[in-house]
Length: 114
Length: 114
Image (cartoon, rainbow over all chains, first blue to last red; front, side, top):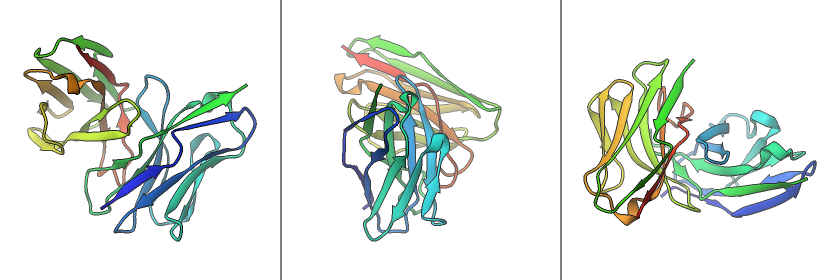
């Protein structure tokens, strides 16, 4: 069965410092992996996706994620946090069986201190 | 450009009352449509999806139902709300399967059942 685990429910960083949001997945298939971001009281927006091409994926707003099969990880990073990055981030895995269902992690709330 | 509208933004309903949440998409034809629920501190759970008018797939047995009376209209309903139906409901659409095409989300409805 497919699953995704976001290791931190909350991450707090200072503005201008690096961001690391951790995600581990479990999948019987070659997975497709995504990161979505949700700003307060808003819908979700796709940040980036991995679909078996390059293992380092670049997304919007300076975020990137690296697919590491040996570690079953897909951590999200950004070199320098901005106040506008404060939001909730969801790691998502697809079952890989042409399903319409995506498996969402429980989310990581990113706080950015001035 | 495509837009998705979801209303109302907030709703407070007594236990046992009916529910109707509406979602419409503009600027595209024959979208795949989805209803997700987000419980506090948890990830998103897919409730229903639809690949065409009158075609509804249910992912989780529950007190809710969905309908798609028009190509770009998706409705979430209940005849009698339960306390456990409280949560943040998100409508979304995609052009293809969400493993290949990104999901576009509405701004959500915060439902409180009292």
